[in-house]
Image (cartoon, rainbow, N blue to C red; front, side, top):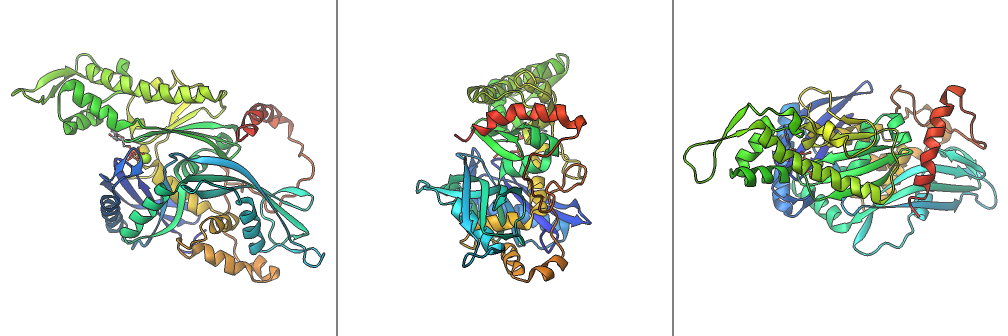
Length: 464
Ligand SMILES: Nc1ncnc2c1ncn2[C@@H]1O[C@H](COP(=O)(O)OP(=O)(O)OP(=O)(O)O)[C@@H](O)[C@H]1O
Ligand SMILES: [Mg+2]
């Protein structure tokens, strides 16, 4: 956990920038201020004009500062999943000195992470994140935090995420130009998947569909990992464009009509309700029924879902027990769940934040970014430290490294950062659980366990 207990999530979206200030009060995260600004400098999720984007970031952050009364100097930034690649990696180092086992310290975690990252990446790509699966200390595996243990050998299994240098560079540059420091850069579906889904949904497998303005990102979270992400360059802006074209009205009118009277499912819209629309080249408004407007919207929504569904089919994704969770601004459209369930198997839900002032699915990512940072364990921070050695981050991670150099007895007395909590507020990572044999499951859990294993095979081959 960060020392300040204040987190600012920055979602640089195609349609709008969202800056959300959250405060951790006794383990509960509260939204204390929000700023939103139209973007202008992005196209389909990617920054195409650094300066414009920087101005919009500045304006959104200023607004969030005014609302929260908190000075903002560092932000947790979401990165789009465009061209994201994921690789399962393994690293191993010798800890023993002069043949004698010794205690594992922070530097060993950094070294083993570095060993795992020695992959040949093309020059245009860079490592964005390294998400821990587990450590092995000599013959004991499934260890979550090896520090303080005595060992000859330390191994690490992790998923390495890499993305285009351009996306990372442009994001860093725009944030720097806005006068802000980056506390963390997090791949968007990692933040939303880890923070907005329940423990069971993350474990058994869930499809997450972020219906943004510029693009739609379909991802799979399974076994507490982001296993797949597909970015489709169609989003809410195209719905507006369709309305504008079909109804012969300005983009501005079209956007307003969509927001005020739009339905994703035309069966829910009325034939009787007539909307007076200002039409280009006509002196008098023209009446269109709410149903007609909905038909235009539904056609694009169906196309968006169909494209995602086809992609999932192409990689043979089975029905996942967690079903589908929709988020992003477009997910607010009435009837979206009904249409989505025609394309995806399982239960479909829309994620709407329950905090006051941000009850809209377009705030899902900015909230998730704050939660993600709040839940980071210091082992995760060390992995981040390794990934971002250039020192582009605020000093939070360095503090962890320095702290760990203290003797173990002293360290035990120091307060530990919060661990990720499950839905029941139980730590999802027990401290130092050494498992040599698969653990017996209680009988009541056996059927769900079996269900889960059905998917393990599918996803264990996923990185091949
Ligand atoms: N009430 C509403 N009804 C219909 N659509 C809405 C509503 N509110 C927002 N939207 C749409 O949601 C989209 C913006 O969503 P969001 O803020 O999640 O996108 P973004 O993060 O800016 O873009 P992206 O994720 O594609 O980069 C826009 O197309 C907007 O028109
Ligand atoms: Mg978005």
